[in-house]
Length: 495
Image (tube, rainbow, N blue to C red; front, side, top):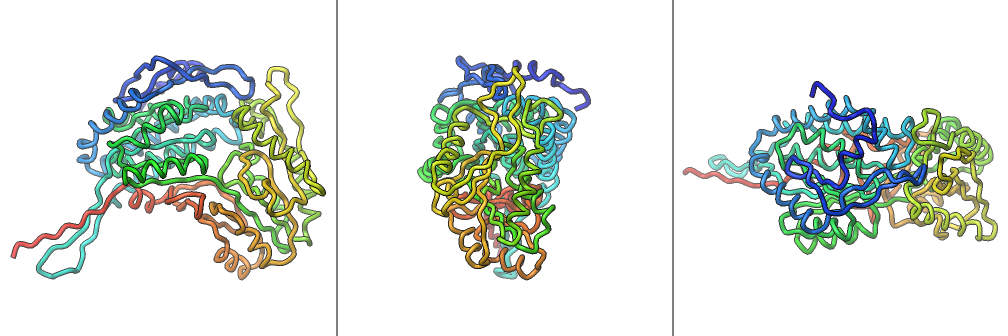
C-alpha cells in the first residue's frame, strides 16, 4: 500500500464504520447500532453495528465461500500477504492508535502506540512462519511411504475483548490466516472501531471473504458464531464465565476451542532483589498504565519482610508521579476505566477491602481536574494491604488498577500462597539467586513464568495459562500448528 487510506482525523475513521460490518470485502450496513462511548468524556463516539443472527450467518457464509481457494493458495504466498498487511498497518499506526485511545480510554503514549507496534509485528512474525506448515515422514515400512501433512481447519471464529483488542486480534487471526483458514472476527462492542480500521487494512491484502469482521453483543452475535455448524474452530479471550459458555458451545459441535481467560498473577519479591528494578517491575507488571485491565496483571505482590518498607515507600513515590488524565494527551500516563459497569465492579472490591478489619487502602496519584473530562471513570492506582489470603480481593480478578500487597518471610509458604488460586496464567519471581529462580520457576503453577521482569505478550514467546486461565497457547509457531491446523496421516503403497 503506497497511500494511506485512513484519514488522520479519528472521527472520520470512526464515522466510516457506523453501523456496518466488513463482510466479503465490503462494508455491509446493519439495520441497528450500538452506541460506543468515549470513556474519558462520556460522549458518544459513534454507533457500531448491532449484528444478530442474519448478519452473523452472512459473515460465516462469506468465510466459508472463500475457504477452498484460500486453503489452496501456497502457504508462503499467504504468509507474504499477511506480512505485507503488517507493514501497511505500521504506516497507519498513529491514526489507529488515536481511534483506540478514544474508544478504550487508554493513554495513547504509554499504551495505544505500543499496542499497534506489537499488532503489526505479530502479522509479520506469523507471515514469516508460513514455511513451517509442514508434516513429517514416518519410518513405518521402507517400501511404503508414510507421511503427515498439515491442513487448515476451515472457518475460524475469533472473539475479542476490549482491553487490548488489536494485539489479541492478531494473535488469533495471523496464525489462522497463514495456516489457510478463513476468519470471522467478533469485535468488542465496547471498543470496535480500531479493530475495524486495522482489519480493513489487512483485508485490502487478502481475497474477499478470507477475513470478515462483525460487531454485536455476545447474546445476539457471539452465541450464533460459537454454535454455528460451519464454524470449525473458536478462539476466545475474555472472562472466565463467558469462556466456559464458549467451551460448552464448542463441545456440542465437537470442535476445538482456545481460551485465554482470567488471572490473578503473583509477583514474589525476595530479600535480595534489586529494589529499583523490582518497583519498576511492579508498576509495569500491574499494568497500571492500562488501568490494571490486563489478564496478566501482577495483582498479588508478595514482598519479603526485610525489604517491605523500602519497597512500599518507593512504590508509592513512583505511582504518585504518574499522570492520570486525558488519554489523548502526550503527558498522560494513565487513562480511564473502560465503562461505568467495570468501574463499579472495581469500586465494589475496594469498598469490600475498606470494610475489612485491619486492612489498609492506599490510593496513589491525583485524579484529573479538567472540566472537559468525566470524573466517573478515572481511578487512582490503589494498593490493598493486610488482607487475609481468602479475601475476595486476593482471590478474584478485579481487572482494575488495584494490587494486593502481602508480606512474607517463609519461602515455601509464599510459593504455596502464590499457587493458592484456581488461575494459572502468569507469575514472576524477583531475586539475585539463580538457585531460587530455578526452584521457583519449577514450582510456580503458571503457564508464563518470568524472573526479574514482567513483560507483556511478545511474538515468538509461547503464551497461555493453566487451570481456569484457559486452554492453548498463543504467540508462537506452536500456536499456529497445534491450534489452527489438523494433521492428516497418508500411507502410499504401490507394491
